[in-house]
Length: 285
Image (tube, rainbow, N blue to C red; front, side, top):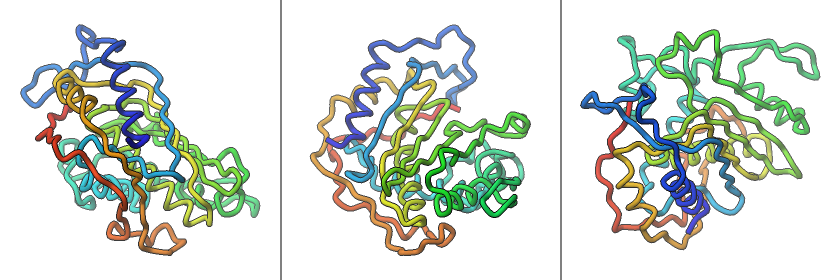
């Protein structure tokens, strides 16, 4: 069993046993048939992964293709700094795109905005991604290496407010640690997705800064399971996990973050339970 398996199982059991119901609260989310997408949730979850030991992949079901799509999305947001779905290989954002194919001033748009930052050489104008990379290479002892996508001034211009909205990067004894803050988490559809993509981003940033990978701490505000996902989640937490240790391999020695390509990534030592096939998972929008 991987740490990702354990965290997923423990969190889902806590939700199923002690979660709050959203019924009667006027939820925003709907199923494709128009009915309310209600859920049960818990408040304030923190899951930690030691990336130096394993890449956080759930083995309870097949994530072989999912991990590549997840990394592709993180490159779309953090490297391309894009809000245009036509520059993304998957179709996960199609339902939120406007007539121009954008998701408004969300995610990559926010990371691409330039600000004036204090540096040891004086004030420099750069975006949030470049500022993180600058500090990791020039001031790694800083406790202020942070990003924020939840720009209140421009929330009205976003097709969907950011779920994973904030990061803090900390360097300790030559290892890069990431704290990821997320306001809301759909456990079945997105939990493994978010942990894999931000773990991969940690590997990329560590390589660019000449560091080893440390831990990923994933903090979630509202952690939930949708009503139509409950039978699928129960099937997963009762499934047999694999005794493996997945490792992420980056087949590109570059220290330039903007040179990574999706074909540079592969996962070694991963196996999944072949008996579990959940079929097409319904998505609440």
